[in-house]
Length: 425
Image (cartoon, rainbow, N blue to C red; front, side, top):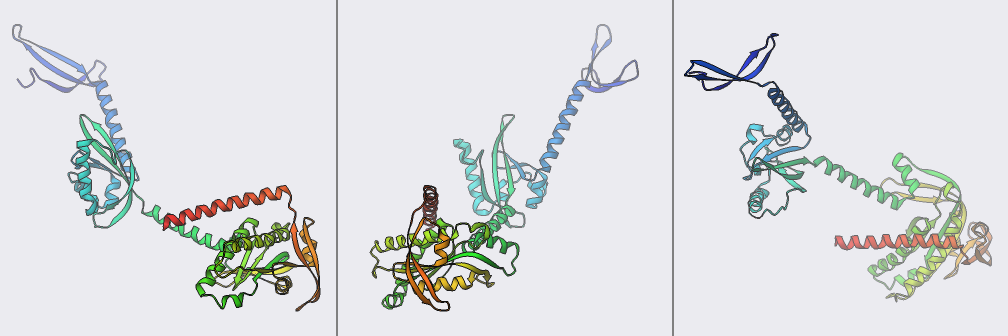
């Protein structure tokens, strides 16, 4: 009996000549000596199987086409399946992967931890990594390592548990992030040295920048009796004092959106932003800045400085300047011109604790400022000039609220920077 009492798959033919797959079973009836055949049409079942097989093959192709490496391991950490990307990224063939412990793709110091983690998880079911993603080091066949993002999922399959690991090489991503961070740090340094619109121009065209501005206000400030004072101070104390005072001025520069040009010893030079579209109230902003500088000096003196209180002379002038970026190693956005010289002379010939300005500043600053005529002085390089003392300013409410907003914003930024510095420490 080769077929009697068994089932097998055969092909059957219809009247119209078409065929179809079927399952044939034969039985023998001993009493009648006849054979009974039972035929079950398998057309629908075969179509369903073909559809399932096609979906399985499609899933395999999709998995192999994935950019991330995929590993399927059992509860003992043994690799049961990998995709094509895994072989490309790690260097082992599929045959070399299957049946090996997943620790083969980990640096030696992490391999033991992984095995012990699986053991603890099987005992406690505490999910430390399951369902999460984190950055780890992975190892290639040649022994080299690379950073990757590892995500692990747990899958129930016919009463057994499998773990699917997705591994994405982030070497390029980290390199790009590092390059971006370096670029941002470089840009931040550039914007800290140069006015924003000048820095943008320099990034686009590193050639020399030199422009003529017909409407720029310049301020010079100088510590009264600096040489005599510092002759009795240690170098460290001199730097600490200047840093404290000038940092207070820098804070005001940001608030009033001005351009700090440079410091030379105890001399502090600031200008309005040398740009035609930003110069509608540059002179007024410099004057307000000067008044607040003395408030900052008083605040410094109220701290009880170790070597006594200090005082400043301030000079302001406005007019035409030539401005440009000087140097290729350490950029400096400097200014030259008659207005710069006049501002320096206003400071040098000024009075301690006073803001001395030229007649052009009085005419340009606006009606909200109060000036007092000091008289006519013989200014070096200019001859007789009328000079004035800036006494006070009456600011519109809108201006007050805007300045207060900038001060509040700057205070928050300073607190944030302090928190970051503390975190780094």
